[in-house]
Length: 590
View 1 (cartoon, rainbow, N blue to C red):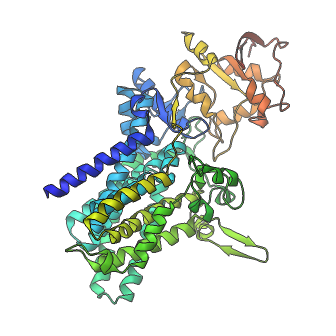
View 2 (view 1 turned 90 degrees about the vertical axis):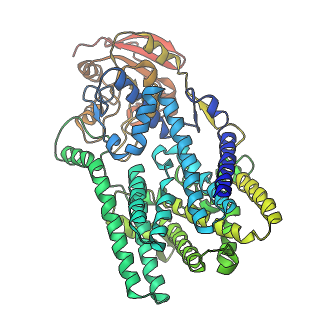
């Protein structure tokens, strides 16, 4: 027992050193910089949300209702109830430290927990520390996980998926009350991490049951084994549901209330039926699993050259799914090797090895197929994939490339078995653990350069606004219209609200009163716009000239490449120009 504990600690410390290198110099800038590129990603919204937690606490405001966006209507959030595992610690860290520290702490926490949970799962399966370490590295530093920590904050929380699988397998091996409760708890943790993973883990669970049925039938298991499987699984699901519902009920009630009312304060996470075309743009390709991330310092150029092509996909947001050739080779070794070679450890179950190997080969193939687009159009006929049929049942889900997390998970587990089969002598053990650790980290490398972004400074116009002590409302042009799916708020605008702390008219969800008003003030050159802005309480208009020149938000621009001239309008008074941003005061009467 002492030897096991010592080995666990050594491997964990080794992991922490690797994490320190991958994220350097983040630990020295926890409250000033963030991990990842940030600008151009959805994570700007996460930083801003954490700032709002701090601001609302300082000013004794209701944290669930933001009065500084979509002014004067505000926005009601359901996120604290839907994602308590993320939002509760985010709130605490934001209030105690600041929003940047909270963001970084959650990212580092996700990496640490992902490693520990995968390590625990593979150690349970192989009884070998080094195999668990190898699997933990693949899962934790997989480009999928790193990309989600950079692009989609909520999707970063993959740590509880291997924990759920660990207790699911324990429940199969030893169906007792303890394993049943822990399995239910771990499933609850997955559900409360992110709604996307709730859907993915539901599909995984269905696949798991189907596999068990066919496996039991093929191996002629007794009827009582079938009964025990279904009873335990059904009980586990009910227990998890009972734990989840009290936390989700406030959000469910709020969503139902909003959807049946014309209230101007809407739920920012209102669910919409996604367009079918998203299933193509946000699906995977075979090459996405086989080509290193575009951020790889040596081989990233290949992915960059293929971005936007039919062979790869639209870009890094959903198509960063690289599994790593080291993990694939180790998985191939695991599949080809006999169970008695892999399971040479004393007191180890050959039957369990056979079951788990076949299970995760099945999960891997299923996940890859589900992540594909709805169909391939091959001239005279179509090849349909599962997402085509799943969309008909659950049209709210749009990004089936995210099933790549199950592919990464499967490869991580199978690679642990493959590595375990290579460990026959102590000499080989020392050599291979060093070699494969190095190759995995080289395969998944995204440094140099450093992937840390400084965000403790802002453009001069926001510094000027922040120095104005009184409270007022601003409107930033060109406005962002967007749709129900995304893009209805400029994330840079809300990110910089952290500096000026003034109310903005951005943030109205499509279909609400605020959104309808926004349509009437879309163009700043419209004669009616300044009067409506004045009626909304807006004091200053900020013109972002670079956005006009670049043609961003075309629906709000008269002529792409030309900036609006407000100097001759009697409704606007020029105040100042800061770099490529102009400030006008509204003097129109409403």
